[in-house]
Amino acid sequence: MHVLVVYDIPGDRTRARVADACLDYGLDRIQYSAFYGRLSRPHQESLMVEISQVVGDDPANVQLIPICERDWRTRLSLEQGDDGEG
Image (tube, rainbow, N blue to C red; front, side):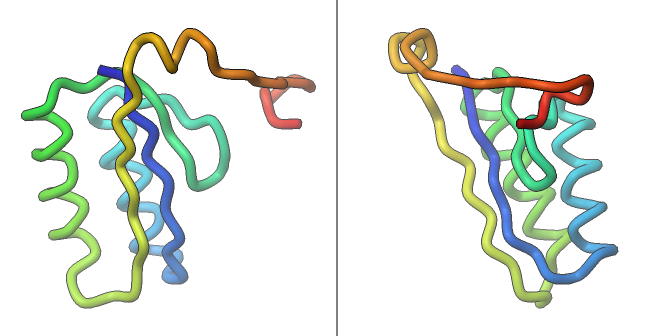
């Protein structure tokens, strides 16, 4: 299943470690604090456990949003520039 992971984490070190976890799970960065890719349900849960451990008691808002194949195919997107960011 496709997933979108977005987060708002004020701490630089914590934010970087969450990004590393997303990359370790094979997700692609689409914006500074947004990643997407395909993860099975067990891997989604495992990633969120890892992120929870990384965040600890630091302030954070992390959302992992599953997206069904039909909705993924109908998404609208605009990518410009060399780095893919608008």
